[in-house]
Image (cartoon, rainbow, N blue to C red; front, top):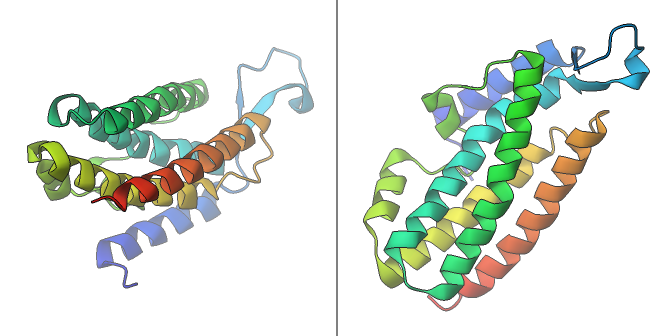
Amino acid sequence: MRLSRRVVVAISIASIAVTALAGCTVNINAPQGSSQSETTDFSGMDIMFAQMMIPHHQQAVDMSTLAETNTKNQVILDLAAQINGAQAPEIEQMTAWLNGAGASIDMGHDMGHDMGGMLSDEQMEQLAAAKGADFDRLYLEGMIEHHQGAIQMTSMIKDSANAEARALADAIITSQTAEIEYMQELLADY
C-alpha cells in the first residue's frame, strides 16, 4: 500500500511531536499538596492522541448522522446509532482531558484529514449525496476504513501509564474491531 505524501508528512509531524512530548505528563485536577502518585497524569502522548482522535471520532459521528436522512435500512440506522452512542461520549471524555490540561483541542482541518481512515472532503460529499443502498455501501466501506485507522491510532495509548487512557484504548479497540467484523459481513451483501 502506497502512502500519499500528505500522510507521510502527517506521520512525520506526529512522530516528531511524540518524541518531543514523550517525557511530558500533565497533572489534571491535582489537589494541592498531593503527590504525583495520587493524581491522574496524562502523558504528552495521551494528550496528542486526544487531539488527533477527537476530529477522527467527530467525522464518524458526522458520517453516522447522515444515515438518519440518507437510508431507510434499519440495520444501517441501528449501526449508525450505535457508533454515535459510543463515540460522542468518548469525544466528551477526551475533550475533558484536553481542557483539564489546558491543551488545544483543534489540530486543524488539514491535519485531521491526514489521519488514518479519515474520509476526504470529496468522499464526505459523495456520502452525503448518496441515498439508499448506495449510501449503505459507501457508509460501510468508509466506516470500516475509518475504524481501522482509529484502531491503528489507538496503539499510541494502549500501554499508557494512565489508567483512563488505557481503558479508552481498550474500549476503542474492542468495540471497533467487533464493528469492523460486523460491517464486513453486511458489506458482503452489496
